[in-house]
Image (tube, rainbow over all chains, first blue to last red; front, side, top):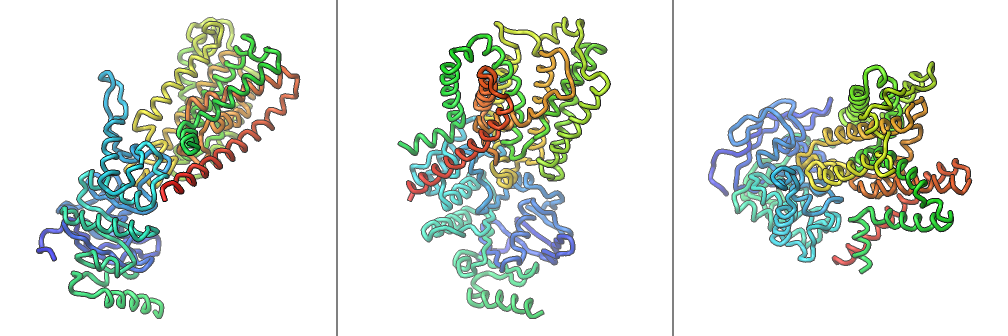
Amino acid sequence: MSEPRNALIEMKNIDLNFGTVKALSDVSVDFSEGELVGLVGDNGAGKTTLIRILSGMYAPTSGEVYFDGRRITRFHPKLAIDLGIETIQQTVGLCDNLSVARNYYLGREPVKRVLGIVPVLDFTQMRAASKKVVHNFGLRDSVDVDDEAALLSGGEAQSFKIGRAVDFRNRVIIMDEPTNHLSVRERAHVNDLALQLRDQGLLVIYITHDIFQVHRLADRIVILENGRKIVDAPKEAVSAESLEQIIRDGSREINEG
Amino acid sequence: MMLRVMRILRKRTEVGVAVITLVLIVGFTVTSQGIWLSAGNMREVLRVTSILAIIAFGEALVIAAGEIDISVGSTFGIVGIIYIAIGPQIGTPLAIVIALGAALIIGSLNGFVVAYYRVSSLVVTLGSLFVFRGLALAATQTASHYNAGATMRANAIYRLFGASGVLGYNNALVWALVILLILQYVLFWTPIGNWLLAVGGNAESARSRGVSVMRTKWGAFIACAFLAGLAGILEAGDLGYADGSLGRQRELQAIAAAVLGGTALIGGRTSPVGTFLGAFVLSGISSYLVIKGMNPQWFILLLGLIVVLVSLADHGLTRLVSKAATSRSV
């Protein structure tokens, strides 16, 4: 879909072992800005492991990772956040016991100084920013940003996390199974948001095991199987049905082997 | 309307214990013909409350961070003993610095093993409970107890730490109230408090936002041991001596006070004001049993019941609120 350009993220010959288990074997893949990439594979194929390297939770055993042309040597969640890489996962990202406003800036809270010396959380800014996202990203109008995040529905929590990621001017949004357990309407809403982010020039990596859903959204499909990359193609080049066949055949080969 | 009330109860966790406090004040005063609320008795109740509250403040931080520290009674004891044992030789100010330094070391060790090696805090601090109680007993084996002596007792700084009063009340009350204000500020008005509650509520989410779970938990253990040590100094200063049983079983009371005050045992929620009131309720019950001539051993039984009942009530309330909120949103 898009013209060839310098990739924002380049992963070269990535291996990742957990003890004797090879979670990733010689995976090389590039991701560019303004692109929505579907990362597909069966359970245990290595999708989540791959993106956990990008979100700084795992370091590869060997191989190279470049971000914006710079080699990444240290892997830490904080560094990924600083680079503008945000991973949106269903069960992670919001603390249910904190208010929506407190969740918004968690980890980078705005502070103002009372009387010029005493640092105090800037509640005005926390409320204003989270209210904006509640309003712009399709949450109920009745959501009070001082309420605990536990009171958000699953779709609202996802939309809020996406909105927060956009507001923080991230360059990469990784969505890990973003629509599991969502209602049909909420699912459509979250998928719309993914397309909007892509159109705004962000890199969106959309992880799912539902090839049909992601084929409608994505510009490019990458399939992992048993820790290896087995497909990397623009979506026009391959139909969803043939991709599903590839995933199924891959599994059969392993089962028979 | 019901939902609003329940939401307030969840947001302002100290409301529950505040109601209990009021009921007990009235009940105890009436049924003891006013003896319980008399100035003389309140002086003692508030002294015990303040020292217990200071330990419980620290305990509440650790519980809010999703861990538990059952060694605070032993930390309290060993720090109090160090203070009284070395004070007469090296002078009160240096003794305080060394005793509190010991508390910081104990907290660092507990916190490091829990946060870095991810060992269960119950196991780690059970170990510290025995180690430092054992040291306390060993240190007092020959002398049976240490005495502050006349010179140390006359020292102005010594008197500042639990050995003199303000308007007739032991100055431990001032310490407790100042610490309460500091904690209220740190917990709810600074990023550090936000991290602590986030780590206790959902450590993985906190980590995904770049919050260091390890450092946050470690810090909570250090603060907890520091406060337990400070409380030990205040108690030893008030008594003027320290023996091997100083602070024994105080960890149970500290946990009970924190939980009673609205600290969630699963982490993520606490209230310094509630914790102070929780300590007041426990000290008040203990004093009431004495006034009524009841066997003080019943107090331990009551402690256990309080912890279980409060946890059950909290669990029920949480379910009610989330149920009411979801049914409304549909």
